[in-house]
Length: 455
Image (cartoon, rainbow, N blue to C red; front, side, top):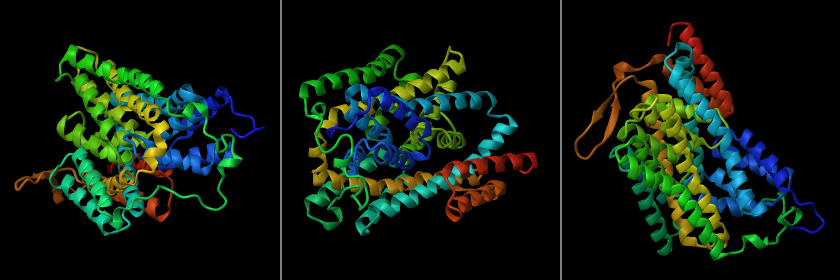
């Protein structure tokens, strides 16, 4: 801490984290920008280098990097309790909002007005996902090998249905071996560098010193790991033992626990994996419902992968036997959120004290670079998958030669939906409107088309 500067109390920090949680719209990029503005520029708790130092580590982790960044900075400022408060307040508004919308969707989802609103949201979501492909691609695909990795990952998942975790493992291995071989394309690099005019660490409350509680303490790390592992995995094991592996709650707990481990690359990569498994393999919901859930997550505060709560809600709503559907859906949604976000605290509390070693490991950074390139291909698959299901009423499966893909039946082209997609694309790329604005415009347009008898 810098001498003679007032250090924020835990109560003051809690108010700031509540503000972050309530205003965290716009996906991970918007959420990270919000935290930077509040914590670095406005309150000057920490400087640019410390902020990027934490962000670089969170980029290495599976799961939502923006939420994990909040936990990291909360821990840096106010120890373990500070990290827990920051993480919970980042997620809680989204949990409440998505649960309320899930109930509305389950009860009135087939009502004309609600159906029309979500009809419009699908078009906006598609435009936002396409924008994410372009943004991430522009940052990640800096050379031929990275473009090749992205193209190969797209073909692997789109044409052959290769599971997302395998694609990520192969990409990481390619990056690791490429760096070890000394190839320039795999030289790694950080996620950002300091520019002139940015806040210097010495001019902030934390200063340049290392707080005592952030030093490596293996005994503390072991205790925290055991507690968090128990909170995460004991309920999962209990469900498998009591209900069996085929029960929908066991499937939800198992699938989203695996997702929490393997989903590197940000929210849209997570969505590609969830769409592949929850829709195609488990059959918990339809492609259109997956898009509706993503529309909910885009228009509510909190991490974008809060859409997983909606997925768990719908899966349990339909799959639980001997239980009122809405109660089952509520429990399924909360279970999904628990096993998705509890590991995030584990990754931070266990690994943050060792961050310097991880940041300086060039082979690990190169592996992350290759994984990010692969994620571009995966998100492109997500965009095409969403687009086909938005614009066409029916698709036909194509099999043989190892292929696992669906192609559109052109006679089933939905002209109103295609028109809304064009409007959404124009709003995003032509007028550069924000995500919430585009979602609102398209939702109202969907309602207007329904009232006009077109949609």
